Image 1 (tube, rainbow, N blue to C red):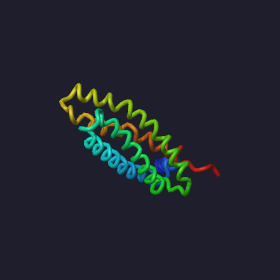
Image 2 (image 1 turned 120 degrees about the vertical axis):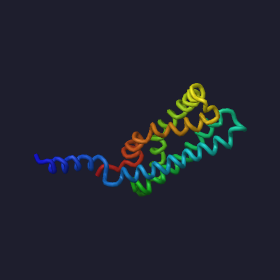
Image 3 (image 1 turned 90 degrees about the horizontal axis):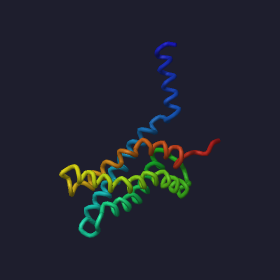
Image 4 (image 1 turned 30 degrees about the horizontal axis):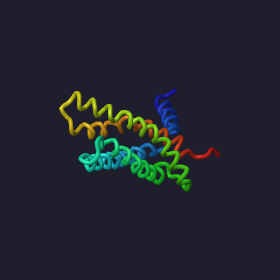
Length: 155
């Protein structure tokens, strides 16, 4: 088999797994969602810092709910381009995110503790930890949304 024939076979296999431009759109919307989510988290953490102990945990919960909804609409309209089914898709989207949200609630205080314990960043620790968590969920999220949140019925 020639090199070009092998390359075209390989591209066909990859194209079957990730439709043309869909993953790029996913990354773009995901980048916006990550910035929006972190912005909400940081703003809420700062606003609640003097009012509530462990404000970063409350901020994480509130920003998660806001971010899931913004994320859902971005993925629905621009990435997976599905029609109708808003409630069922939003619930499935929430299901996909629930694992990441739960993991975040467990890991966030651990990361904050570790950053405070091993670095000089006492006040910045919640912001640093909040910035590290999304890195862990990007790739897993694509496949969860593709195969659960916005799956298309089989014809």
